[in-house]
Length: 93
Image 1 (cartoon, rainbow, N blue to C red):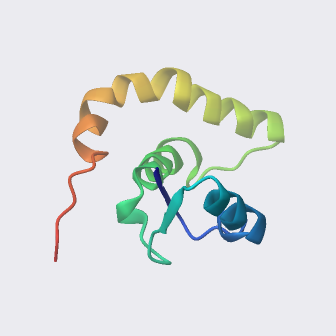
Image 2 (image 1 turned 30 degrees about the horizontal axis):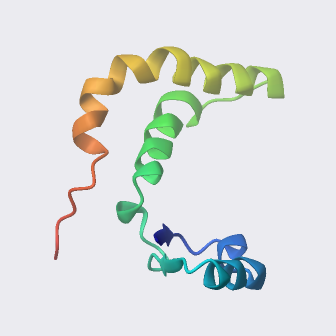
Image 3 (image 1 turned 135 degrees about the horizontal axis):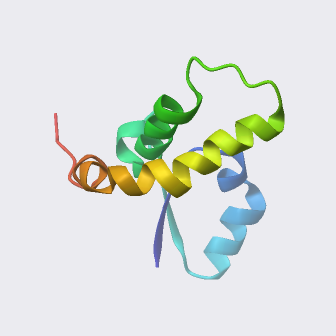
């Protein structure tokens, strides 16, 4: 089994790498700064643009509400657009 991970400290922890080795799992780490290789980063970018950027939230409740509205309402409306933007088709440079 092969698992692709980012460079998060908890992914590189000795307990993780040791367990993976014992279970015959090969870990592959993305380059240190490679948001273009990690599709979730593209989704976070869209979420930030639509729900968080340049906005003031009076409370944590307001912030949570904005994020939840994005996932429950905005995201489904954007699904056609995002399906072409968040893909595993990478361009080699």
